Length: 68
View 1 (tube, rainbow, N blue to C red):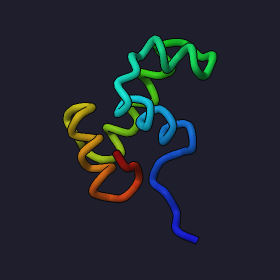
View 2 (view 1 turned 180 degrees about the vertical axis):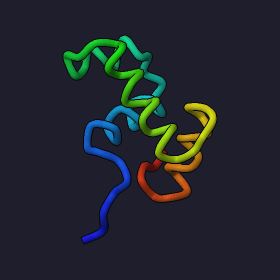
View 3 (view 1 turned 90 degrees about the vertical axis):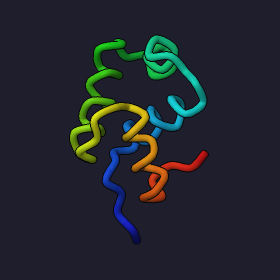
């Protein structure tokens, strides 16, 4: 079984981000605050050593963590 660098929630959030969901729409989807969504995104950016959301998305695609 391969292990992911993302938690299930982080993966779901980035899958919605690449579908052009806003932070608010993602928060509403999971019934969490926008701040919590931003925290998840920041955690992923930090894990990857990226400098932006788009950079994180590119890295996650390269790592086969998410797909378009």
